[in-house]
Length: 54
Image (cartoon, rainbow, N blue to C red; front, side, top):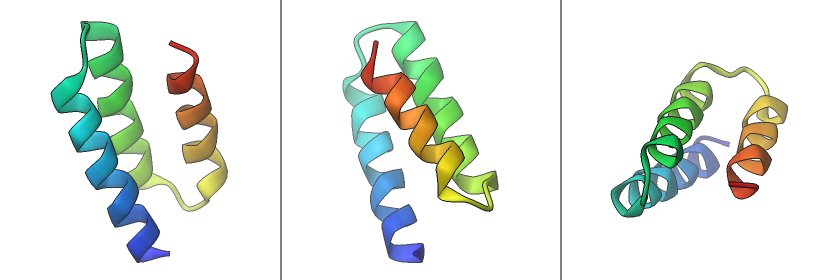
């Protein structure tokens, strides 16, 4: 699981570097925070789904 979280974190950082607007960047920061603080993957996956709808 730690590897999966690390990969997601790296992907979020890369996406944040390429983010085209503030809303996108804010959501990526929120996702990173949720990833660090979450006990379950459900919250993280819901947030990723939300990000994908931007």
